[in-house]
Image (cartoon, rainbow, N blue to C red; front, top):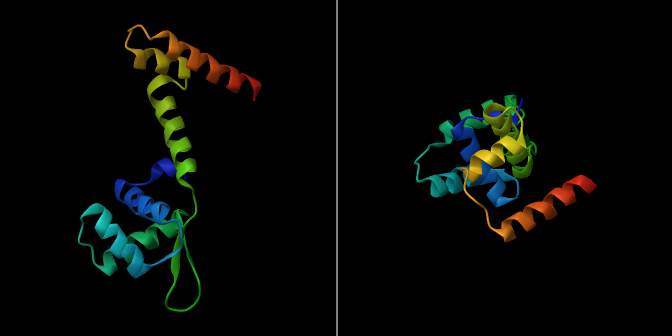
Length: 127
């Protein structure tokens, strides 16, 4: 499963897990998620989403017995890289140069921005 196949709600749950940065019990995740999003979900709703997210290999339930903790199986950085690549492919045929040209909107960019871009391009070239 690609990270970009996440629904918006699954992404909100992942954001809560990433923000906490530690495995969370269902109740802890639910409380933090509701606080972050302003929603008023019940345990069953969160449990249903977590079950589906486990099937998609987005999260894992760890620990034994009745009380499990949930951990994300992808990092925020992996998600961002995957989403960025998908955006670039979908909108600009995978071309960074085309995207950059579109973002500049045909306007002049200042000399400092040009120097910054050159530094970044040189850094990428060395990799």
